[in-house]
Amino acid sequence: MGYSIIDIINLTFSAITIVFIVLTAIMFSIKLVGQIVEKFEQQTVSESSAANMSAPVSVPKEKTLKEMFDEDSYAQVAALVALTQASEDEQDKRFEVASIVKK
Image (cartoon, rainbow, N blue to C red; front, top):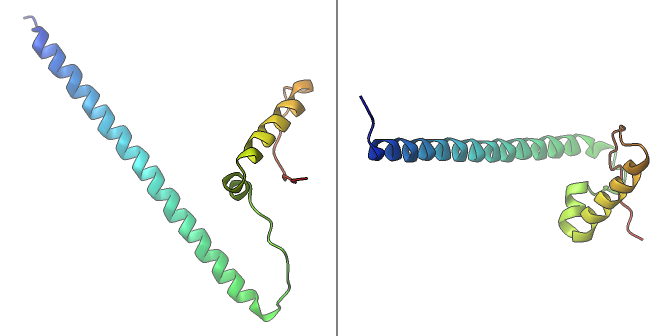
């Protein structure tokens, strides 16, 4: 019993469509979970800052790397170049950006 070319094409497009739908659903669920976690972290930070109101101490808030990358488009390039130069001599080590200082 043989399959016609129409059956094969139909099966191929159906499989591609199903894979596309599943991958799109996974992508949106990952984004949704990320937003939920971000809101939860913001609530936790605001609750902890409200609890610390009894002893006000002015501590300058350091910007996260993500905030710096959003503000300055060259910060990410600078971080990548610094990591590349640091890893040239020792390629087996793991490097991490601790801070970025704009001069």
